[in-house]
Amino acid sequence: MLSGIKIVEICGIGPGPFCAMHLADLGAEVIAVERAESISITGESNAATNPMNRGKRSVVADLKSAEGREAILKLLEGADALIEGMRPGVMERLGLGPDACHARNPRLVYGRMTGWGQRGPLAHAAGHDNNYIALSGALHHSGTAGEAPSAPITLIGDIGGGALYLAVGILAGILNARATGKGTVVDAAIVDGSAHMMQLMQTLGRLGLIQEERGKSVHDGSHFYATYRCADDHYVTLGSMEPQFYALLLGKLGLENDPSFARQWDVRHWPELRARLAEIFVTRTRDQWCELFEGTDVCFAPVLSAREAAQHPHLVERGVYFQRDGLLQAAPAPRFDGRVVTPGAIPVRGSDTEAVMAALVSDNPAAAWRS
Image (cartoon, rainbow, N blue to C red; front, side, top):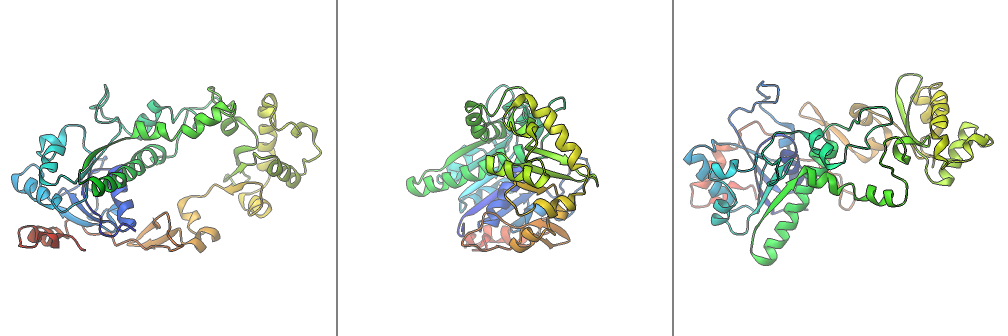
């Protein structure tokens, strides 16, 4: 769907590479500019291949050298967008800030991925996913009463509030550049995106379904929208909010005539009813609950690991996961016309350096791009 879109990625960690991978999955031509040796957060060298580089070309360049900087600027002359995830000011000090890049390509969309944003009191401070969503308010309701808030690793901040917002910003910028001939700078901050993601939650708050205090809202305090432990120490989820779904849940549990469960929305009784359901769910295994509930309108699902999910019949039929390059990978999303797209292979670090650099100094620099 993004055939013909050309993107240069200055490789970092986390949301920037994910955004570039997502765009590559959707058909964009992405050249990933990497260091000669990548160092992980543990201080150890990463493997020669990076799973989030799938579908990209890999080029090694020293951005601190005049040669490396000029090569990137030359590459950007034919690009639609750049993705970078440095702290504010770093790209400018390298001579690759927005002004320098727009001087070479006025139509360039300059995508900047940070946690705190390009400006503000915290802009230059270090941080990670949990810090950003804590400050934005997105972490507050992730948990139950009496427990510390906990969120799925990277999903709310790095990916949801970061990478996906950067992707939308870049695509909007490209559309604008094609209409006006003028590029733009996209300031994608995880604090901004994760706060924006809470807009539905704000609406639910106005309806009285979300309370400030954790454990008092439908999603973190009710008995009918919760996660329960099973006899085999696996877990299942319920989301039986609507009255017809709640009635079906009670019927399958043999509780349809129990007066305690008749007052679904009486918040005062939620802790007691949640405890009673916990006692019920721990009497059977996860598979046994799946046999009873799965595929019904109870609004039910087992809690699966990625490897378990890859074997679930629904996800198998949809081709959600696949194995390649020795790794379990998720297929590109969303789908267009029902097609499941197989992304490109994972390149070895720097495997395209020679070809890309040779093209840049030739009479046909456009040959640096596959298309």
